[in-house]
Image 1 (cartoon, rainbow, N blue to C red):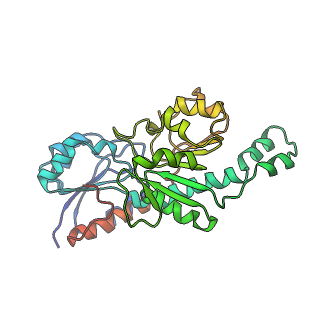
Image 2 (spheres, rainbow, N blue to C red):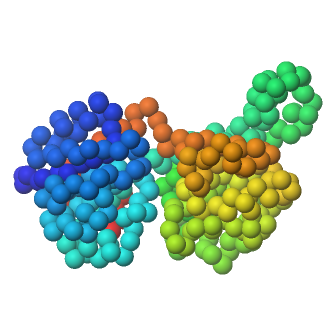
Image 3 (spheres, one colour):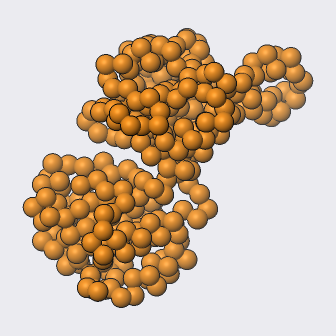
Length: 323
């Protein structure tokens, strides 16, 4: 088996770092300084230029300069900073591939959205607010606002791995799931629609889930027009990237009661400033980009990379391939 030089800078726990070191013992591992945040880009490190395999959040400029690179593995699901014409051209020129870690995050993100949906249906947020603020007993009002999910319609925008897992979680509730993709696939387990059918589906959906990535085509994808196209009283959920939502238009939709509620795990900017109006907008519930988080997240990031490394060694197809 050929030995590779692996440059790595993912943000990891001590146990995950030990796992990475132990699992790559047959290769040359170069551990670079990581950032304080799992999503932050690392510093420019010239040692990367000697590596055939790069794992983590490398400086994009170093990827373009690299002459030896054969495989770039991103330690997050998001890869916006690496999805550029320059990097794609570089990878093509080198006959190199790029993968990400979306398989690590599809289940936690789907479960996060599922928790939002169930908490909304069972009125858990109003009940908790009542407990914290007034300690009254609004039993009748809360019961009247509590809903069953059966026969409701869920539209998932950016129907990929998170959407597929969410559709599996929703299956026992007898809901209708529709997936929106730029290019629908004919053999999907749920009905997939393209841009021409989006407006009609927004009119009919009780829940709209936004899992879109950040790119030139998706920024403010959910703008004032699309939010107005949504069914009155619908719920909006965002777990992809904050830039895909026009937050000023969302605030207006919530304040005018066109939308019943919004559940956001991502915002623009992040962290969201304490004085930002979203914090105090009616029926807007925010989690601080924790949707993909889980207690063994870092170990699973490494395990995913190691499995792909095994495939790379054996010249098999890599999981979560982007290029």
